[in-house]
Length: 105
Image (cartoon, rainbow, N blue to C red; front, top):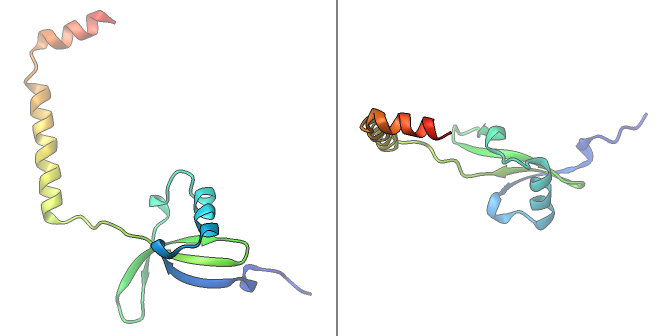
């Protein structure tokens, strides 16, 4: 019995910037809405890690290293202060403005 499974395919780990054109086409097909929900954390034997997605082409299965922005404390504080200022600006609008907008519909 002979099975033709993906074990016949070459497996490569590659950076996103170095992908060949056929792999880019496969990304467009496999991740039409983006890959953010499919990113995996890969831990190397030395404890270091990278983030990657899997891209399957007819001849190669790529483990593609993708950049992931890790939020810092400064990012969190900036986001938090922006949200607070947005909420304050909505609260500062007079009640009449809210009612007029609703009456126009």
